[in-house]
Image (cartoon, rainbow, N blue to C red; front, side):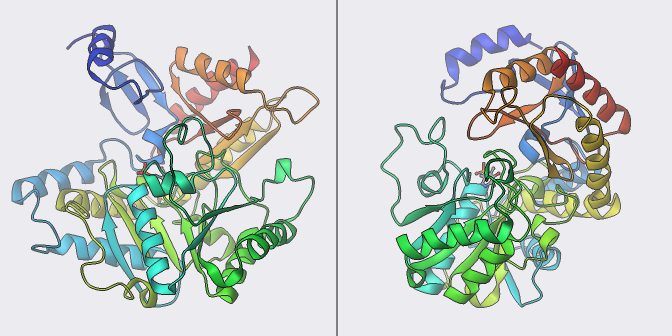
Length: 420
Ligand SMILES: *Cc1c(COP(=O)(O)O)cnc(C)c1O
């Protein structure tokens, strides 16, 4: 196999510069907590391919299910000739997501596509156009989802014009909110919506229950339920974007459960497919079924190989009780991180945790230190990611099947990187 250096040369000559990578080492194999590069160097994985490989990068059941399905058939297009596994994945989404009402689901290829479709459904069902999103939100890279995403660099810069009828409300960000509690922060957001959009114009309120790329911001308790209650009152669809938070990641099957939320629609992707590209929208039957036949779909949405992988990944999550595994990871990481000095905040839930770094004695974001710590982790063999509007958040997303040993080895590297 070529060396990482050789591969990097080929990459620079062949792959568009706009597609970046966190590290310049090329992967040869990966398991349930480590990656091995082409030089045989091992990396402890605190990234999970951005919260995707909750069951690991090569979960035995997923591997077996994919192999078996590929041998049977790779594609027919569900819109042309349907097959059982698509239906079975929708049944699982209905069963696993919060919401005691009757539900329907539909499958897509990527998170952005799921978000686009949730907005299509909400607009169609309500006959309204406005979509309310929040500061620091991330919803994807397609044209509509760029408009829904808050941050200019790198996601939106010079990619406009963006889709219209998207309105941004203030988020609950406890570290930077000067003591506003959840209901007060919701009131602030609702004021903006009522004054600038008008309750009767809102098709959907779209929010990540814990923000992902925006900095792993956990809204103050009561913020989400107050927004959901307002949306219900206003006749707007409350959409939880659980693409990063779903499938056991936060110590519940879905993060909405932490506050007893029953979103009208939920978008899922990432952890759902055990590494294969698959996404879904699930929610109230009355909304989902409002759309005319043929109004939703796509050539590859709910591809049979991806469906087989998703069913096997979900079975693995149940069998290994990855909800509890995520809670255990939270306990280990949170107690270790809270002992480290000079961290503004340790936050998150389950195996979706982050630290925010600021300049001493202030709330001024310290992006330079964050980048330096991240680089030191990479040099020492720990794969971590940064995030946040200000680039000053280090996030930790280990696979939920990571061994205690790898978790502690990763923590040791992180501690050392923060100390220096
Ligand atoms: C990753 C992500 C998306 C976009 O998913 P893609 O599969 O990359 O299109 C949307 N919303 C949230 C919250 C995400 O974390």
